[in-house]
Length: 597
Image: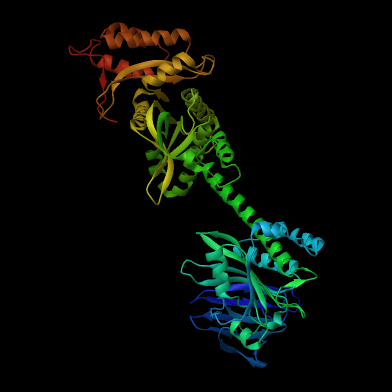
C-alpha cells in the first residue's frame, strides 16, 4: 500500500493520502482536486495526475499547466516514482511512501536492554516535564472531536505524542493485520528531512501480539547495527505501547529516538530511569483513546438498540454494563409470556398502484406512518420487532416481565388509532388518508435476538404472533380498527380503567387455517371520547352478540339494528342474519367460519 505525503514550508502544512493500487488521482490547489494542497501557490487548481500500480506511481502534468515538477533538481512533465522517491512543486515536497514496517531480522542486533512495563511499575513512575505533558494532553480531546475518520485521528494522535515526548525523534501508529503483516498507518518525524520512518516489525509484533504490553528495545550504537535496524535513520531506542489488543484490531503507538551522550546501559539519568516517564505518557494516551473508543462502541450499540427498545430497557442495559463491555445477555432469546401487537396500513396495495409513478414519494409516506406506529409502541414501553412492508410488530413482556404489559399494549394501540384519526382532519398532511388495523394477542412465545449466524434481529416467535397477525387481518372484515383475542379481553375487561379504554365482544370465529375457534372483541376508546359508543349502546350490542351465538337471530337483528349507523361493526353480523332470512341454520353452533384470511 502506497501513501503520498505532502510537506510544505510550514511544519503544519502536511498531509498524508492513501494511494490505492489501480487508482488515478488529481493533485492541485483547489478543493476540486482529489488531493488539494491549498497552501502551495505554485500549484494550479488541477495540476497533475497520479496513476498507481503495484510497483510504482506515475505523476504527469495536466494539459495547460505552467509550473513543472522537479525531481532531483530536474524540471520534468512526467516521471515514474518508486517507494521513497519524491518530487517538488514550488515550496512543497511530495514523497511516495510504502506503508510498511521494517521487516529485517533483528536477531543479530546488540540490544543493550529489552524491558516490559507493568501497570504497577508505571504507577510508581514520576512524570518529568509534568506541566508540559498535561498541556499536551489537554489538546487530545480537541484532536479526537475534530477527527473525521481514522486517518485524521491517527495523524493528530501522532502529533500529540511527538509533542509530549520531547526526546522522541519519530512517532508512528502501527497495526498488526490478520495476515500477520505490520502496517504503519501514520507517522511523524521531528525533522522531516531525515526521510521515511520505518518501525521495527519485530518490536511491534512482540508488543501487540505476544506480550500485549509496552515493550522497550535499546540497540547498541554501532553504525552496522543501526543500518540493519532501519533505513535512513540513526535511532538507538524504540518502544511500542498497545492501544488495543482485541481480535478486531491490534494497533498501538510506536516511539523511537536517540540516546543522549553519556547515557549508559542502565538507561538511567540523575538516578532515574531514562525512558520510563515517556512510556507512562504513551500508556496514558493509549488509555484515553481506549476509553473514548469504548464509549463510542457503547453508544453505537445503544443507538442501534434504541431503534428497537424502549427507553427503560436501554437504561437497564446501560446499568447492567457497569461501565464495562455492554452486557447483551439480557437480550438472549427465551420463552416468556408476551403481548403482541400487529399494526398494518389499510389500502396500501391500491395506493402502491396509484403511486406507481412516484414510488419514492409513497415510500416516504409509508415511512412516516411506520414512524407513528413505532413511536407509540416505544412510548408505552414496548419493543419493536420486524417491519413487514407496511406493517409493524411490537411486543411487551420481554426482556422484563410486567403485569402492565397487556395494558400498555392496549394504550399503545389506542394512541396509534388516535394519532391516525387526528390526521384525517388535515387534508394537507401526507398521512391524512391512511387508516390502520391492529390485532393484539397474549400468550407464550420465544422473544429476544433471533436469526441466523450472520443476521440477527430483536423479535418474537410463536403461535401468539400468528394470532395477532390473523386478528389484524380480521379487522378488515369486521370493520373495526382494533381486535383482541380472548386472553386480552379478559385482562382488559377486569383491569383497564374505562377512562382509558373499553371492550366489546363481536363474534365467535374460526379464523381461516386454524382449528380452534376464538371469541374476538374490539378495543374501544374511553367513555366521552369523540364518537365513542355509550355504555347503553355497548350493552345492547353485546346482548345482540349473545342472541346471535345462541341462534336467536331475530332478537339479535333487533339489537344490532338499533346501533348508530356510524358503527360499522354491526354490519358483519347483520349481513349474515339477513342472508339467512333472520333464521340461524339448522346446524348452527355459534361459530362463524372465515373462508379466507
